[in-house]
Image (cartoon, rainbow, N blue to C red; front, side, top):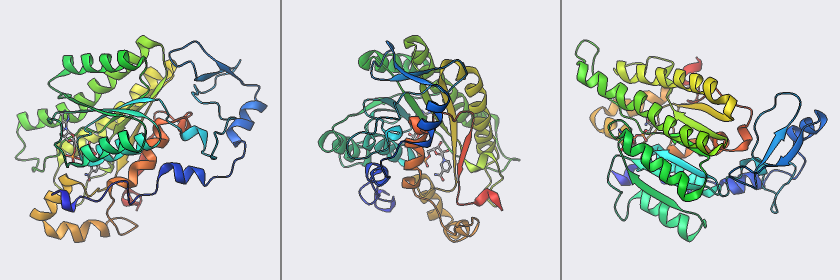
Length: 337
Ligand SMILES: NC(=O)c1ccc[n+]([C@@H]2O[C@H](COP(=O)([O-])OP(=O)(O)OC[C@H]3O[C@@H](n4cnc5c(N)ncnc54)[C@H](O)[C@@H]3O)[C@@H](O)[C@H]2O)c1
């Protein structure tokens, strides 16, 4: 199975490299803020290095002084150095690849997953080793079921916040999939699907937002939805999965509305088909899908987990500081015909 999962990070361009290619200029955003009379102040909040905007008019909560470009020319808005970010479902698949992107951008990452810690030789352990040896940061693992272990989930997230004195973000990627025709779906399976994909995401976002609220800090939460939350997938019989992902998109909007006043942003990512272990198993059972699915989008291709690295760093960082309540659909144009 591992052999057919796309390679992570080493083949992909580093985010640092990508951002370094951008010329060192004062960003348009910074100029606009200066023109608007916005003053950047250091605060006494949890992270003393994080400035906040003070203005007589409403302005987005920012955590980065965009006028200060660090040495090397990296766009400062994308820098996650020192930020503490939780990734649920990060033992494998999309979650572990997004975790690696966050580590490359400087974050400390804590993975929550219902599986026991992945063994030596797994992609997760390779990423953890790379974090220590190459990236000068850390990847931590916590076994918890986001649906059935809610008390445990809250304790773990509180411990993380206590350990670092801060918590800055979340990617809620834990999710399950089930293919069953609607006429045959039983209530227990439907409850399980909605329980993990909707209630589990809500409980995870709630646990993180509670700690941000307790610490008086701002942050960014990203919920992994799917293009299946917007469309019915041709020939893929997943009525409850699709309903669960529509619920995630809507949940994101409501959480954004409730928590925006606290400076906590909430957005969703809606991927198209990603060739992860989950999808690779389907291709063994239904080989025709590997041929048909790419034809259903405008790029005539299937995506890899690496295709969502930039989106993860963008949404978790100050680069997206005025963005909340949005769904970032990245599907090769599948839903845009
Ligand atoms: N693969 C795709 O084509 C695709 C497309 C769109 C959206 N997504 C979404 O992306 C996310 C990641 O998918 P993936 O393809 O990497 O799947 P995956 O099965 O490879 O990974 C999912 C991870 O979530 C964990 N998990 C599942 N239930 C959990 C629970 N109750 N508590 C804690 N952890 C739990 C699993 O152990 C696993 O590590 C999911 O939300 C999925 O719905 C996937």
